[in-house]
Every structure is written in structure tokens, then in C-alpha cells.
Image (cartoon, helix red, strand yellow):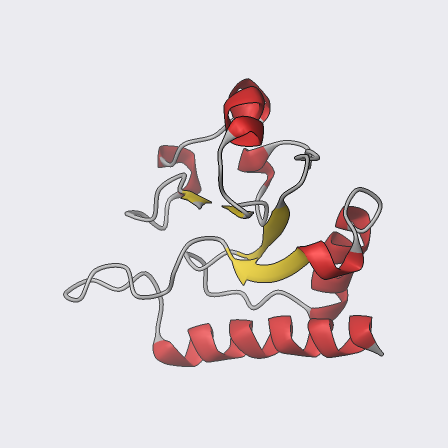
Length: 127
């Protein structure tokens, strides 16, 4: 299950913010195997542990042009590894790249570069 904080604007100040902490008891009780959460920006607050769930860890922001470094993505994953088993973490973008057909948040070239950075980080972590 994905919890979306908004993907309608490139202006981060207009998008939803705040910790997942108030939702924690509800998300923890949900009968889903994976939570796909947006953690690529400070808007999400601290990383939380959810019992008996895999974490789809958001590690790149699809709304900005800057491509996150593979090293930065690895650091985010390593922090998550302090709470989650290695086989319970999946690296994802915060939300998708195919937002609105008439007004995409980013170009295909930037999306591919961000996905490549995720892939490079994942390969390095598997090393």
C-alpha cells in the first residue's frame, strides 16, 4: 500500500508534510504485506518501524530535477537496515513519475537517471 503526500506540484511547500507517527497504529494493523512510504524528503519525518511489513522506502523525489546520488540513496537504505531485515526493504521513488499526462512532474530523462541511481545503490548494497 502506498501513502501519497501529493504529486501535483514541484513546489515542496504546497505538498503534505508530517510524520507517519499518527498513522502508525493504523498502518501497523493493516492486512498488507508492504507499505510504500515517501521518505526522500524531510516532509516525512523520521523513519518508523512497522511490524511484520516490508518497507517500500522512498529514496528519490520525482518532483525535482536534481538526481539523487547513489551514495545518498545507499545511506538512506543503510539507516533503514537498522530497523528492517535486508529482504524487507525495497528502494522506490517517492510516488510515481507518470503523474499527469498533460503535465508530467519531470522529464523521462530525469526519471531514468533517478531510477538508474536507485539501481546502482541497490547493486552496491547487495555487493
